[in-house]
Image 1 (tube, rainbow, N blue to C red):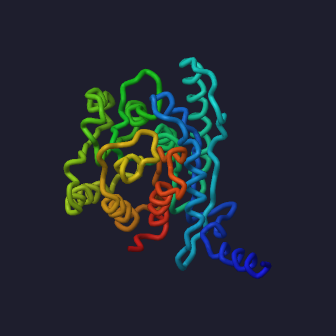
Image 2 (cartoon, rainbow, N blue to C red):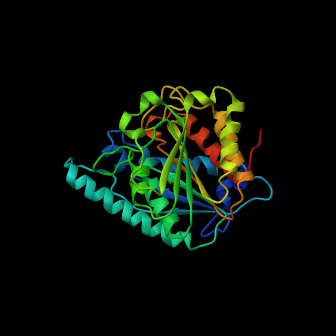
Image 3 (cartoon, rainbow, N blue to C red):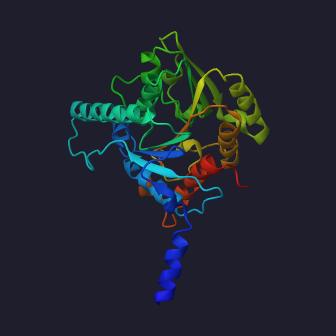
Length: 312
């Protein structure tokens, strides 16, 4: 039995988990383990467990040569349960969380790193991320949002459905929000309304444009024309249909094929010339995953390819 145990320990040293360090200039995993924004948006809770679940799944993969060092950072330590149902108190708690996360992100943005992977939690975490990017003196920002939902609600309180309108109306630099995979039946009419801030604009590539893989090329050509922008990619896990990925905050009837998402991320990794790249993964909810963690493995593999490139 000792030989079996030693053999299993030796195997574990071959996996990606053994390459996690205290700090890294290559890859940072930034944990935002809160689903309070999802709760305030009427979604089902549980995505607060997503970052750790995805990281643990990623650690089980085998790294490629040359192996890259990775570092994990906890951006906030929220309460595990919110028993107070008073909307005003929940909104205050959410505002405090976003301020805490923003401060942590601003500090990390001052450290060199070629790839930052922002792991939610709800999509509301995109707001402090964008604010931190703006504070790091980026002149123009383009956010590529792979998502069935626009997340541009006009609610008077901030939540996982409002981050992009919230940032777009506040920003003092040119901001373009490129929506990819939008489902018209999953978005209220108000979410399509233009921003009041003249520096901000939104362009929508709806779901019906992506019926085959070649349709992705028009999107990628558009991104090539935006090389004067600092480009950030966000993947809301409900960009995949509920039949492909059921473990999300709000399951989606239609979605982009997995292969198209991989192609977009591969293009960003290899064709967008930026010293620093940032990709966010949001709304994975392990509470609704199966015993094999099938949904986690699909998302973790997208993270893996974001680090090492396409393997298939």
